[in-house]
Image (cartoon, rainbow, N blue to C red; front, side, top):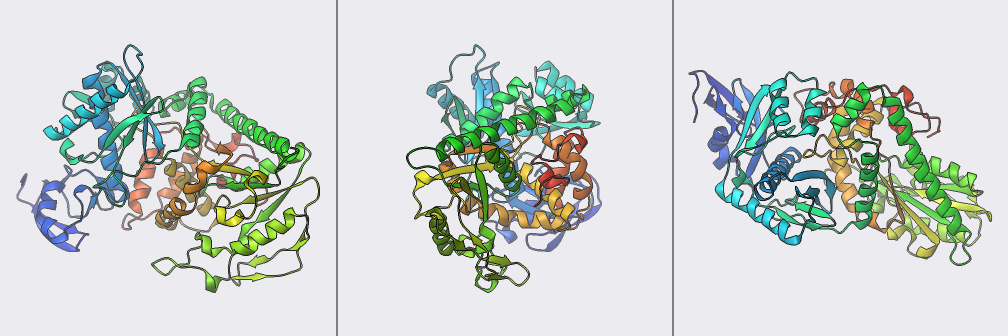
Length: 566
């Protein structure tokens, strides 16, 4: 155990709430060895939180601190593991194919899609992927250490400029940082915006296989990091990402550095206008497709189902689609699944006793389906109205009947769940899945999780509406994500069309709202770790005012100032 000075520090381990004394300058790895037998985590420790901020195990402590050790199940622990795995992959590609280019683009199929270009632009083969995977395993077996170097920003820029990393140079040049950390694995240097594991020997669980025209980096399961996460085929989601990536290339925007350079050149307004135009073009195409199928001689569309995860922009998308349907000569009738909530006393509950409003059993889907079936037969149906104050469903004489030019629109998290419409022929339905699938990355090896885009939107919206503080929204987010995994994502590939609500310049706009909100999260609460991470991430983007965001934009659903009534 390293001893720099005779000063003894008090370190409280939050895993067991026990405090022990350590010499000043002791590493987290050495501190963990003192607590390991007492806390007995079920899986290997990969990182820690120090005063609720994520740190690598090589981090040295020089003041009294609270420390919580994490395995690869927890959010920040999982990110440290995957981040380290990405560097391992990059190192292996350079060892096997010197001069090649690796682009770690986005999450898909419970792994990470990687675009790989060999130096001579030869086609990537299955044997190439096997060679890279074997080299990754060799580095793990060697237990090669990850080494962190803190340097001035100018020095870090020089290091990456010499190695031809234009993406990292642009990122660091526009970051406004004075000092930057970079990492080395053997003789390979790279940049990551968070800590890594101490050495490659920690990365025992991984997989690499061909995927479309690239590779899929497979990672440990969230619940059991000793096994790989189960692969799920997602061809439609892949194509949506591919479509967005093609537009990014056309607009010359692939990473945060590109966005920042465009902002500095005064192109922010143009980027917003083009992004909004591309989204409107897609909505028009969807509306025209619905119109075409509405007038089909056989099995005409009468029911449009719209779903997506939290803060994907479902509500505004629904309103914009309705306008385009009107322009096509159809009359959209929005139908709220919220009115079919069961009485609150009958709502299922989470293990902690809170109501589980995201559960399919929180909706009287049998009654909903009966009413939909009767409406589509042309019957007049009395529909309920849910009183959120009393927590009860009421019958106030509200009746609906579909006219000959009416298309019924249902928007909600369960819209694509077969239980809602299993008695209605699929040929009569048009299914839309919407999400904010971020294609912009920080640099070639640092992707931006889709969850971060939606979480920032939700934090800002909740705060602006006075519904929840940032701390409360972050505290709820784990349950939100678990509900999405159970009730939304299993059905996304059944959609007829997918819509991406993310904007290329979105994070630059979100920064102007998110900074002060995230800064309000107290340092002494568990949610500070996530707030601190998001703040660090959002600062990679230069701030842009939202004044150029139009009132009909999906972004207005979260920033405020929308011309739609919600």
